[in-house]
Length: 367
Image (cartoon, rainbow, N blue to C red; front, side):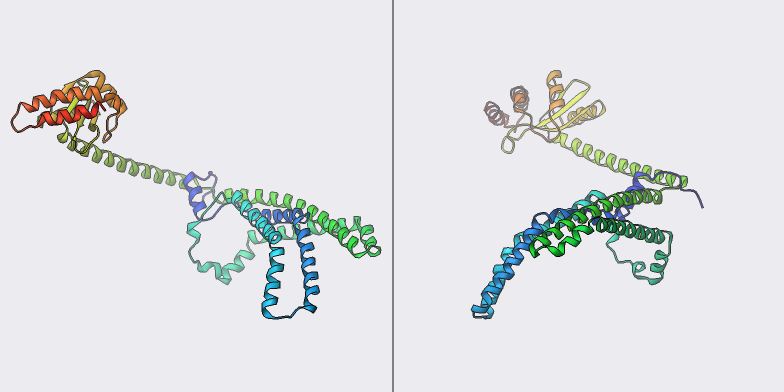
């Protein structure tokens, strides 16, 4: 079997991402959840517990003297729920945002489309036993034992250091004892959450290393992937050249609709068309340089379209206006003069109504 010593190519990384094969540690979510629970215990959870006690007290006070009908009971339940709802919503939203944020930070908005399908191997008991007793299964078992040992040691050391406070709880009244117990639980949550966060960071580093290792490629796979990439690039280049050829052919066919072609005289050619009834200003029907310009001039000659030499105007039009775009206002007067000359030449031929077009265009250009 060939050695996988080469780093994965961009295509290999993208395919792995589409299959959901990215570095991901569930321990980060669990650690963030523990720390968030410790933070929320400071105010939202405490306020929720206080409101819950008030609600229970309110129910016990109202129940003996009220007529316990279904309508009264439903109204009472809705009233108490509305009192508890803000704190509950805040806690749920905080955990939701935390979980989604940690997941997105690890996967970078991954959407594994190729994992949406049903796979029989996932429910095959034989494959399940193979995964359990594989190298990865043993690693997960060792990780679980390590986490349990570290968390258990932290809890043991904490209870050992706080045993005098635990003994003092017996001598306190109920309210003071609950507050003291709550502060101890909060401190324990922070210690366990901090330790678990360190374990999660180490686990994420391991997952990242394991993922990169599993995606390594052989030299032959890298060569094959490069060939595929070059083939895709060649295909895209062919498609792009076909599209450009089609666009150029369509542009050449538009030359026959032009009223005039302005040239440089040999390097540039711009074909302009204007219909007073349909257009606010002349439109560039075709433009090109060198060979394309020569082709535009030849087509104009074949169709008896006037070719006007104006070097500054040709350069300015070529740089400022794209095909199928109307000319900007700064060119109105210059183009109006050229079209007026063209229409005068056409008016000498029978059947032309150039004078009407010239008047309409000149008046519009002066607006």
